[in-house]
Length: 71
Image (cartoon, rainbow, N blue to C red):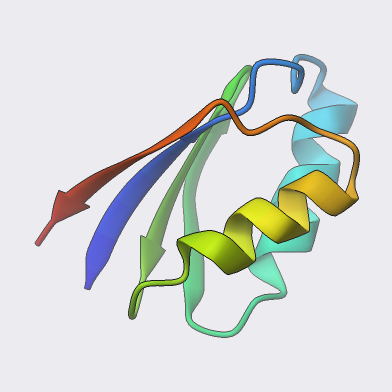
């Protein structure tokens, strides 16, 4: 398992955070750990960063970076 933090600078409001949480949590193998303004922390079963970035981008948000932490 791996944990990543996704930087999403234009995800400020609770409404935006809720949209992103919902979209990402529907991806199989992804567990949403924490959502805050500009950040999304996830635990993944495998390397799924591209799928996460695509899901967030489809909502119209910019992904400024993805930081990985191995377990």
